Length: 624
Image (tube, rainbow, N blue to C red; front, side):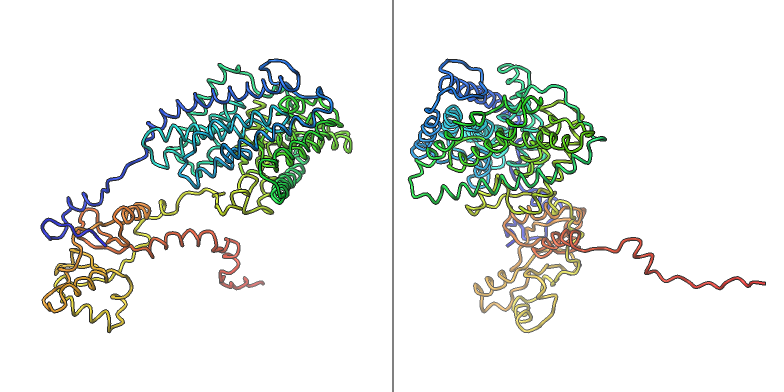
């Protein structure tokens, strides 16, 4: 119902209406969040640095028996048969941490960050921020075929969330801080600040607004600056000159698109097939990562390049330094090792291994095309970049982010068009076959969670009240007997009395003085059953909340929510007593219906209109 608090019981003046219709609400504190984003950017960069060094230390100690903080590229087996048991031990430790610490460390990190946004108002437990990077370092340091980026995205998000929990924040503000940490973590690992921002928008924020874009951008930039101080200004992948000959190679890039799309579908299906396989094992969850690690150890015994993060392998692929045999080993066995290990619910990132396998696929494709068409002269490195970005972008439905990612790791503007073409085609293929879920959201969908996949401007913010309001609302005179009105509502079928659940009350001059709901009528008549002198104005709400024709439906709906009412009189802005219409829930839905019509209603093109327009028949000129 409308608010009944009125000091004098008179109709609202312009000042009264202005006071009521400026609801007190707390706005998003953009500059406070931006200041916190600076702090989060620094913290996330240091967390990424610590994780990177911890992975490097563990890998060097376990596989090369030395203390060093330079991340090695495992290319050969230095442990002999004992290699089989090393990943299994790492998996067992992760399983124990998941059981007695927190199960949120399991998985590749990004879905868990998405889940925090959707289910818990972006609140992440402090132990996740500690145990997730530690578990990932153990899993990767003992040979796990993962990258550090997924865990650091989740850990950075946890840092942002914890900062947001230290002070009073709204869930919307905390979500932005979580995304700041996630973007900062990715930027600090890969030195790709632009792609990190877009990834946060596409996978965590579920919005593209200045209030979120500005803090996330600042956090990503600050994290990259700190990373330059800690790890140097060089890129994670040291890539030499690559020739992206878009004019000569266009047809080959177009053909690569569907191949990458099908590969993305294959990765998604296979990952959750392995997860289901391990889920059906009648074992305690502690042992599942150990079993996955044992299988990984067997694979690594014969193909050691599948072990560890493999950043060196990615660099070699991009620089066309690996023979076909090694590329095939990476494509087949790295993919298999990743799917089995991650399917066993251990802790590790999905991005780096998919980039490695995707890069191998693209390089093999270019080599095969050069063999079939010797005049092609395709660059394996160029097609590796396009393939790795397209496969992960399509699988995660973050295509825009990975077009920029491919550009940022090469710093070659010539890569933009190939990346756009291959990624867009791959994304279209995945969208056709996997419309509902992605490699990031399948796990969440199985838990009954719905993650937004597409973002668009809210139609309620685009439609004006004047476009959808009822211009002929039910109007009743203020001095009408209340009992008489009740009888008319119960006995007549006058559409003006029944079209809405509220009637607008006007005085003898037709000016708005109140609003009367059916609930108001029942309540007042029950309180005064024998009073025949009650008039409509006695039962009406007089301190009105109104809207205006030039307001958006979103603004009007905001008033409804803040005042807990379901309908608003529409009045002239310069005269709040001059009634022009009525806005209820049905009219709000009409705004949504307008968008539905735009998407569904096919309108005839100009050619059809031209063909269907009757034309005058002229007479032929007389011939002599």
